[in-house]
Image (cartoon, rainbow, N blue to C red; front, side, top):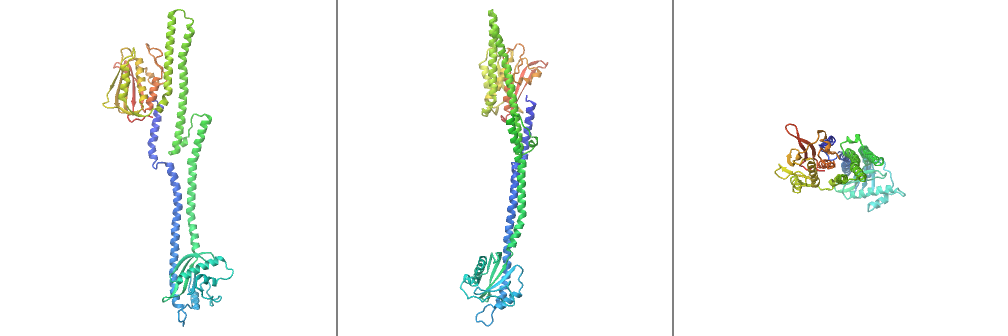
Length: 535
């Protein structure tokens, strides 16, 4: 039967596999945490930027519409009030316009200026007084750049020149009759929203009214100030995610790497991280896998050491017997004694040959299980072939072997037919070695709630109750009276259990008894799963 350690390990594995689907709602808890934190920081930053861009665009557009409405109203008033009397053609009255601008309330942060029909400067709300100062007006030109050159002072700042050129282009475009709404730089370098509206009398364009608002930079500064909290929050989230990655990913991986190096350099047998094994993410899986791997390697190394010690002990016995017989052979004088020694030597040689063969098979078993490809196996057909070999080619002095199946169809499972055949041959050989001459070895196949049940019965003396489990240990042999010495190496049943466990099954031994309580023979039972859980 399976040991308590194997059962506990299987229960733990089933528990972990049952918990993983519930703990992996997003496929990976750690990956989901990293993804959510990084996306959250980016969403905060981009969301804030998009919101502020839309707000800035809407604010600038609203400011332009407001200035356009004010400029249209002022231009309509100037079209009625600022006309020179007595002229054959209507024109702006410069003094009337200056007085009107002086008396008209212009909101703080705004600037109103007026240009005549030739694009020349007439009045400015920043320079309004009782007498309009300034130099004589230059001759009328035929373009915005010529009017700008006429108004430019010698040695003027290039920034001022560019500002006046932009204003001249805006005024010239407005003189064509279309209102202009632009964002440009003023003479002081500030960003301004400028609206230029033609001043009309009936259909005649008398000049241009320009209304500027220099609060664009203030709006942008307010936007940048409003964006700072979003940027700081995004930075904090990014720093937090980096810190969490360092704490929950980098440091544990560094600890695992250092532990692995310690195992390699100090030849340690196992590592254990209780604080990491309790985590239900990939780091916990890695820690548990590393611990399981090192524990398995440690158990394998211990098993190899025990196997080597057992092999050395078992081989020494026939070798010691052979050496003693050879040393005694020179002292033997009668032919009868020489024949007995020769028979003893032959028996020890056969025992040694059987030991070496079984040891070789046992040592190659893991490699064969790893290399052999899984396939669908019909247990009924496999058992029929194995039993058929014993039935058709019986060895001298052996008892008959029979096979009975209560399965109506094929008994299929996914496994390795070679190792499974070795299981049944070892069980049959073990039953034959302990069966009396009048006995029979019976092999049966049936369907059980746990899977496919195979039993091998013999009519031998049975197994002592205290040895029902130890018979599966390596090099253990129980030889009743009348059984030939050296006929069993003690590895056959150990190989049986190893192969059955590799296929996810169970094997155990028990005694068959009569109603009177007498032992009628031994029974070995193998249960293999039908779902093919071979490893």
